[in-house]
Amino acid sequence: MNDNPRKVAGGCHCGAVRYEATGTPLYIPYCHCETCRKTTGAPVVAFIMFGEENVLFTKGERKIYRSSPTVKRTFCSDCGTPLSYEGDWGGNTIIEFYVSTLDDPEGFVPDRHVFYGERIIPNPTDQNLCAQSRRPMVMIVHGWLASLFQASQQWSRMSS
Ligand SMILES: [Zn+2]
Ligand SMILES: [Zn+2]
Image 1 (cartoon, rainbow, N blue to C red):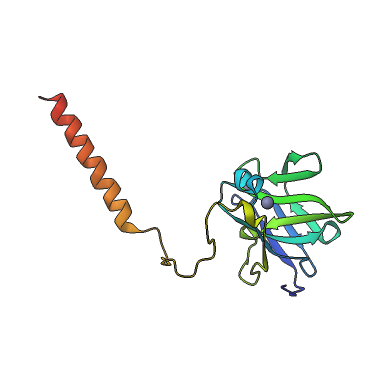
Image 2: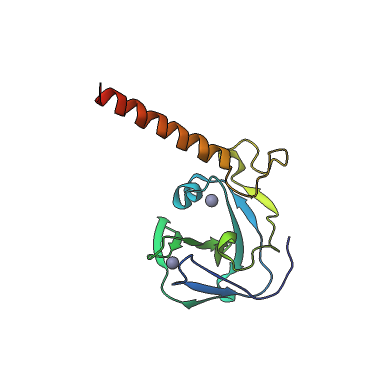
């Protein structure tokens, strides 16, 4: 559990929608459920959860998608960034922001996995995976060479 009581701020990629939250996050889970995966395009998401009373949307209007009768998923209608999960938690309304939408997400390390049985990658926090700081260049070069080769094959077929 992260007990950092500072104010946090975040928003979407284009900046049209902004939010702030204060107080200690209720919890910080990784979620593996299919609905989170489908609505974000990510294989796993991390949330930071607050009570609704501690959240203020400070700029713009978030677009609401109801993923079930009691759950709202929100996103920016300009840039498409998924912003929040909003629903009922033990009789209280909670808002969970995707950790990645925080301006400074560094201090908020997930403290648990939820819907772990629905995960699509066998060990999502495998420390033994190679850790690269950028997209691997060698794959880009391979892809570029492969497309060059295909183009030259097509060209030679066309001209023969
Ligand atoms: Zn946006
Ligand atoms: Zn989920």
